[in-house]
Image 1: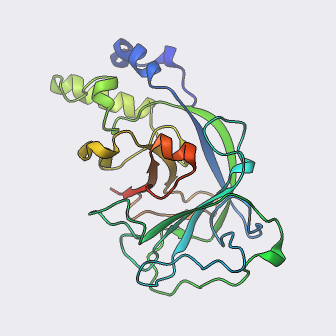
Image 2: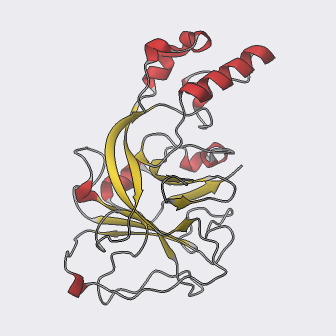
Length: 266
């Protein structure tokens, strides 16, 4: 996010130092509709990279999942957060009206899967070419396929993050008029909406980490937001957003088995 913190509205100026201290590196994701992409390219929607001999991702009940996003780490700009190579895939259940989210266990990889390939074969003859077709009753938030362009950026904490009060201020522990002004101005100047790797997440409702101390060290791995610009068709419920979280130690180890999946909408 590109903002000038020297131009903060008056009601935010007393908290400038705290806001600056929340700065994190992130990689913004810009999408463009694309008909032709290789199986190993980064993408949102479309067909996944799947070596011949590997089973297509399914739920525990045997339902075929759908590729939400695929990240080829070799395509990222220089950074010290992510692997230098390999492909990371995010699958969700298009046969479920919750897109595979289990509110009782958001880390249970049943209705969603996160799969990492350490090595990448850029050879169509070594890769599966025929994929399951979504039925007419699919609930998928993603239609079609989008190409991905990555851009290094910085991210500042969003108002709905669970630790906002401890890092900046409690926006609701103020007089009514002051509280309303703070919330309105902050949301106007700083928001974590959009698609990204790392940085801060955006929520339309609440941060799932707020209610579970065991995941309060988890950080944003990937966020895919609602997007209907220029032929892109992504819609989480009623204009919602999907996020995936990971413990920093697991990211360093390339262990994606305990990723937490969340989405919410207005």
